[in-house]
Picture 1 (cartoon, rainbow, N blue to C red):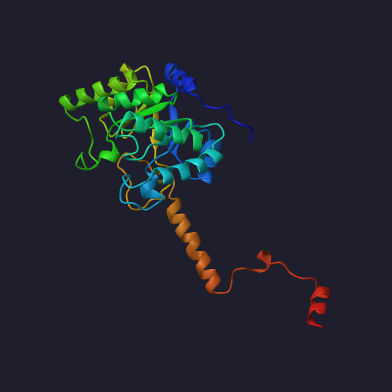
Picture 2: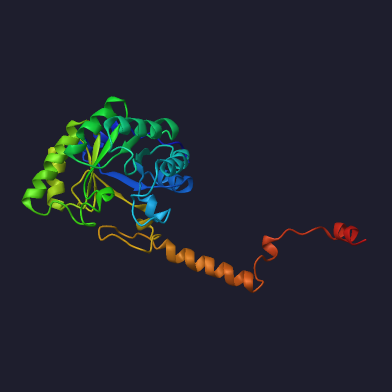
Length: 280
């Protein structure tokens, strides 16, 4: 397959201007990154969702910078053309803008990311400004912010009434003004997402935010049916690879137990002459 042209921030902004939808999925390892890149995805997110679907934590909160960096490096090796964004994990950027710059810098320098993502609205504007001022592109994230799920009293849709919707509109404006090159809108009403998308000059990437955003992102494990514990209402399962994988592994186990695998086609044989020499 020929090398893809590298997706850039300028290219993403041009897609918004031209009304072309931006596609984004998550990857946590080299092989999945290659699949997404070969499929032509515009963006790949090394999301902190890996805490749950890849590492088995109960939420995104426990994942560490070291764990995220490990996965980011693997994804970077597999992504040739897609624009790769790293989630900054909980409490790796909230303490101060200086902390955020140091953490974001590690993801750019050690894992060669194209950008970082951090959660929060107007309260995070000074942090976003500091990171951008250091030369690091930032993808914003408002609405349902999973790192703050305890504060939000669970995974709830945000901005359902006029008062909270206005706050999210203000938050979106603050994040754009702070220098974010794009903004994730998670679990907000479709009508609100449409208003924000119309008002911002930077692209919006929706997840559970309706069809009017400039792009869409989902967790690949949800798309492929690989995470049986929970599938969000807004996710669409395009394949049930988890069920197929279980069938394949069960068949392998049965064949080994029955002595059916490996067969002749999976084995290497000595020549009769060499076998005779061995027996002497």
